[in-house]
Each structure stands twice: as structure tokens, then as C-alpha cells.
Amino acid sequence: MDLLSFDAEPLFFDHPPTEEVVQLLQQAAENYGDDQAEADLQRAYQLAPNHLMVLVALFRYQVYQQRFSEAIAISQQAREVIRQKLGLPDDWRTLNETQLFSGHENNMVMVRFYLLCLKGEAYLYARLGELAKSTPLLKKIIEMDSMDDLGAAALLAVLSGNEPVRPIEAIRA
Figure 1 (spheres, rainbow, N blue to C red):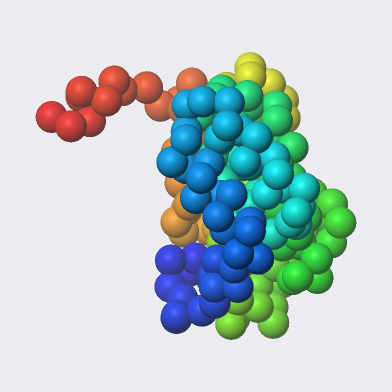
Figure 2 (cartoon, rainbow, N blue to C red):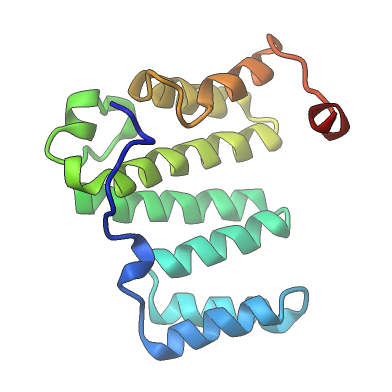
């Protein structure tokens, strides 16, 4: 299944949380870099702990703060929200293509989001030096994404030492 081919579908932010939560997220973005931003995000999380807008904002904040373990936990929570919406198995390791794609043709955004959560977790585990946790996640994505639209194969190649890591300057040249 082509993960880059999908029609206009509802996105996670098409159903925003309450106005108070939206304001807290906006304040957090405006105040990024000071303690108030984190306080605003935590308050938004308390008010809407399973809203994907809140989880994405909190995930990004944790990643930018290099709190990778916390970011992984948030990604896992977002993935659980999506898993329940899509009716996927509890354990991602048991997921197969039929379960992931069958009946979700009109919800490919959420399917893609689910796989991107797995990829984000894999990347963060790698940053933490936990390749034994990172590698199975990437292999599962590759199994589901035969065209490698999400780039998991390239990341796995780098982590496996089969692909040299190029400095950003070399990529731009």
C-alpha cells in the first residue's frame, strides 16, 4: 500500500480540543524556551490527555528538550489513541499488513501517523543507544511499508552501519 497516496481525509487537528486547551498550546509555542511553556503544555495535557494535538505538541517539546525517554512515552500514548481508533492489535509486534490496511482506506492519515509514531520511537531509542529496542520497530515499519515511503529502511541502514552518516553540509552540496 502506498503510504504517500491518500485523498483529503480528516486530520488529527480537524477536531480541535476546547478553546482553553488551544490557547494553552498557543501560549506554549509563544513562550518556548522558558518554564511557562512547559507549564502550559502540562496543563493542556491535564485537560485533554488523549487529544492528538496535545500529544504532538508535548512530544515535540520533549524531543527539543532532548528528553527522549519522556518523548517515547508520549509517542506510545499517541500510538495507543490511534490503535484504539483503528482497532489494531494491542501489541505492535503482532500487527500485519491486513490488519493495518484492511478497512482503513479512508483513514490512511491515521495509519501513517501510527507508523510514524513507531519510527519516532525507534529514532529516539537509537539516540538513547538502545538499538535492541530501535531495530525491531524499524523492521516492523519496513514490513508494513514495502515502498519505504516513511524512510525506515534508510534509518535502519544507518543504525546497522551499512550506510555512512553524512554531515548536513554534504547533503546540501
